[in-house]
Structure formats: C-alpha cells, structure tokens
Length: 473
Image (cartoon, rainbow, N blue to C red):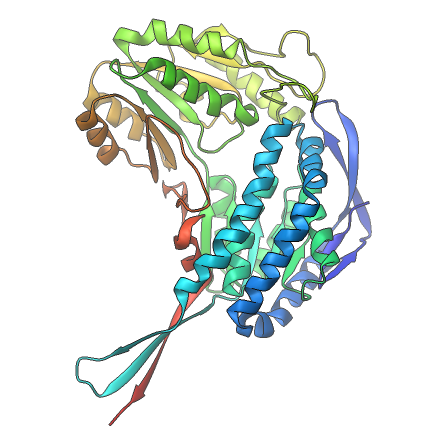
C-alpha cells in the first residue's frame, strides 16, 4: 500500500482506498486514505518548514530540485507505469506526462534567479531602495486527475524554487503516481515539510486545507464549480489564488485553411487522453462551404484511432477515467442526437471492446449553439461541428461562453488570423497549430481561472514583493 508523505516521512492511515484501472476494471493499487487529522498534520508540517525553507539560499533550494530531478529520472519507468495503470493512459502519453515534471524542475531552477533583489534610488535622492521577493508562504495544491504528473509539475517547480512549502492533494481518481513521487522525496531525504502529500475524501481533506488560515496561497486545476467552492471555503483568511478552471474551447476552421492540418490537430488533441483535456476544442466552427468535406476528414481520422491499453502496441487512446465519466459522455451523446445533432461516427463502446471505460472516437455534425453539447464541456472523445458563414458572427458565437481558456484558429490569411486572435476572449489563441511547454504561460480569462501556470509569470503567484527603504541623509 502506498503511504501518505507528511513531514518528510511516509505514513499509514486509519483507512485505505483501492485504485481501479479504467481499462479493465482491475484493482492496480491501494493508497493510505487520509482524514482531517492527516490534513492538519500536513499543514502543520508545511508551516514549520516555512521559516527555514523560505530563507534557504536559492542555490541550496536549486540543489535540492536537481537532486529530486535526478532521482525521478532513475524511477522514470516506475512513475510512467503508475500513470499507465491508474488511468489506462497510452504509454507514450504517460511518458509525456512524466517529462513535464523534469521540464518544470529544470526550468524553475533557472527562472528563479530572475527574482533577485533589485536596488534603485528615489527621485529625491534621499533614500536607497531595495526590492526583494519572498515566498508567499505555505501553498495548498489541488491536482486534477487527467495529467497526474504534468499537473504536479505545474505546481512543484515554482513552489520549490520560490521557497514555498507545499501540501499536495492529488485526485482520488489517479493518486498512484503522486504517492510514488512522495516515495522518491522520502528516499532522497528532502527536508521535512517542504513537500507533503495527502489524499482522501474531497469534502474532508479539501475543506480542511482550504479553511485553514495557514496557507498563503491555494492553487487548483479543476472545474469552475470547484474553484468557486475552494474560494468560498478559503475565505477564513486573506489568501492568494492561482486556478486553471473549466474550458469550452472553440476551433474556427476557415475555407482557406490547410484542412488536413486542421483535421490532424483537432483530432490529435481531441482524441489524445480520450478527450480529457481542458484545452481541447469543444466546439469546432467550420465555414459552411467546406462543412461536409471537413466533417469527412474528421470521420476518417476518428475511425483510424487505435483504442486500447497494451503498452507494447501502437495505441493512440485509452479509456475515460471511470464508469461515471463514460455514462456522462454517453448521456451527452444521446442528448445531442435527441436535440438534432447528426452522429457521423462513434458513440458507445469502440468496436471489439466492451469492458472498462473505453469510449469510441465520436464525431457530430449539425450541432447548434443552444445544444447542451455546445454549451457544456464534454471532457470526452467527442468532436462537435458547427457551421458558420460570417466572420463577425462566428467570433460572437465563439465568445458566447463564460469559459475563456483556449481557442484555435485555422486560416492561411494572416490578416484574418490577426482579426480573430484579437477578438477572441480566451487566455490562449493557437493559430494553425498547437504548442504547450513549461516556458509558455498557461491561463484563462473570465470563469476559466486566475493567475497562470508555466513560464516565469507563474513564479509571481508564489512570490510576494517587499520594499526596503533606507535613508541616506
């Protein structure tokens, strides 16, 4: 059984929780299931670590980051296997998840040096001023299950670099890889309290952590509803928040675009990870003159997706995370049909697979803006195609959502691309491609979040500026 990691030690708990592989419904692991006392212990441990970790010279913190990185490299296959088993995720996709963890530790171990003390004189030349950057304090991080180590990477790099002890709560749907990460922290003798990992009932562990006055910051990857709940629960004290929340990404495909490129990218990001990606296109707006031909390109690609679980086979897509996710996606597919959408391919289990939580790559046409499938984030391998004729109209329709995370444009007209990019109300606009990396800011507008993950900008969520002014009269 995998144990909690609190105060530099691996700990058992009163209860345990079995982790199910959604590819075959088999138990693949068991974790210590934390309770309120474990959450309080993790907070106390982080709080006790704050004075020495935040004041530790940055070179020493970076050395610990490098030591952790090297230990992770030695356990690469073990960590990838944890993701593969807890999610049923394709092996190559789980490997990408792991790589982001290394990228984060490397990137932030260098980026932190940009936040050294800065000296400047005032306009009257009577004071000498110093601007320093200090740890914001203890951080509580809630991780989503869809990319267990990638989501961990987004938090662990800036937290360690900035001197913030962190309490990590992984999702109970995919906790194995995060618990395995805690094992590695224990193996290298990471200073106690710097990283703490506890999973348990969301309402008990989550609310205990959020209610506490210890955290200086709470960071979350999850739904908008969860973000609202965390902020409400956390109002016991003034806290900083960094949240990446729900999406309803539009992809606009113009008639002058490279249609094969557009189809490849949309299908690639929509069927990767079984569509369980917050930035994946939820509404694909296709210019009317190419609507039918583009739909056929999508159908052809969807029907060529290799679905399965074998790590040694060329698998493109694994299952949904659990049975409830399968039932939710299938209910939305059936509702779209009842509302007038035309199912071009997919729906239900893939051919030849009738166990686990696999869902067939699915493509709809004739979707309208008022339909549920266009208004709510699908979070499954379902492409919904809507038609448009007017640039102004499609911009208005694309923006008609409270979500504002990612958006996509496909056109070979540079002026048109610039027009769309400036008008779309989303934190990210991707033109004729898709690119993510630890060095590129990632965040949303409107109800899709606050603050940002990745890039140097993320460090500013974990650091607070401090001015020291000394008279020179």
